[in-house]
Length: 578
Image (cartoon, rainbow, N blue to C red; front, side, top):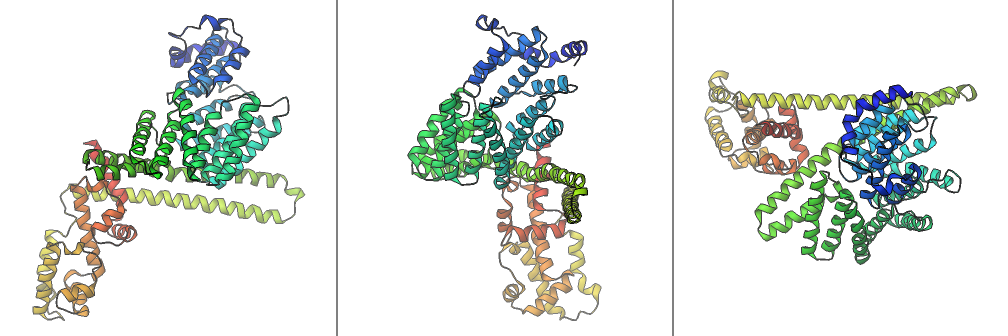
């Protein structure tokens, strides 16, 4: 980058981050004479160990870089400050955005790919997985054939996203590739100790998530050994935390508690709220499983408090809310019970919204480009291959096309459900009752006269008609396991006659009649009762007589054109606008 454009750009962007890193910040006297190499060395010693100190060194690097107009150290300063802020649940995005802006025309080994990697890391810390993936893919494109370190590092980052969706078997090969790459470098002049030890942790963590606890502990032991060997303790507390998790699942509760209490000190010191929340969660689980309920509850409440501070949520902690709800139910504390029911409901909404789409995006945006890249390699090598490669190429293309087609169909289906949910809500607004309306009831009352002579006895038909009206008015259709046989018995009739009567009076078969009564009823109730909207689909289905949520959802979709989950979500959104 030329100096004059850089200076102009520097003054344009400094308003974004300069106030946070320079205004009011003074380089301590003890650091004024330090060289950039010394500051870098000091930063590396305390990163993830004492992030407050690491943040100080990062600010000094940025301040000195700007003062001396050294572009490389300005880049480095922005990168380090943003990363520290991401780790401590602060807003590092202005720094990452500035770094992307000032390096967008740079073309060297590090940048601009490193700026996009940083942005993805910050989004990952905030559980914005879909957006994080976009930046990783951009970085992968920029680093291709330029920087092997970045290329393999991005594999690790993609692996981290895959573990977030429970795709641990797919993530493990990525972590092992990164580990083997770093292991090969460790005895060369290009060794990167911090990345090497970090790669060991990634493998150990993935084995932990895959419930292969013995293998996880093997890699944790390797990691701790390497921390001591190279005197680099950046990842040490995470290995200790991993040991606590392994021992919990292996039911070594005492060892697990000791490890988590040791890790807690580092996470508190560094304001690492995410890992601190996980630590408190496992301390709660250890106490709960060993029947120390009061201690468990205290740790679960701490878990919730820390997650509230960080404004993040980890799905693994979900069952802590269930335990808290049961605990306060036994105590008769309805206020606290309701509080944690709301917390659980919120947790489920996060899980459903993030995890549901993440897995699709990773498959579509990461795996598919890899398949395409392989396809391009096949084409490049086509002259030296036999005709069998054409078959592989065709199969690969077909798979990609089918996956894309399925994805598009799924998007269209979701859009249609949302559209029908809006139509359903609009009907309720213009006071057209979704239950059987007055006009239909009047038509049914006159149906015998309108139809002329009925093949059924008028007197018996009138008797069935009256009983059906009582059946509807008394909401008896909400009972479970109603069949035409059981209702015929209640009506002192027989199956065939009741079935024909329903066809005659309602112009539909018995199954359609029963489903419409139930669905029209629940739509009205959902419109009126906001508490009902907080129930699970299974609970609602059970309340109106269905044996499972699938049969309820299918009936709801056939009658309304949408699914109950989409309609409930729309009602909640409308309620929030009021």
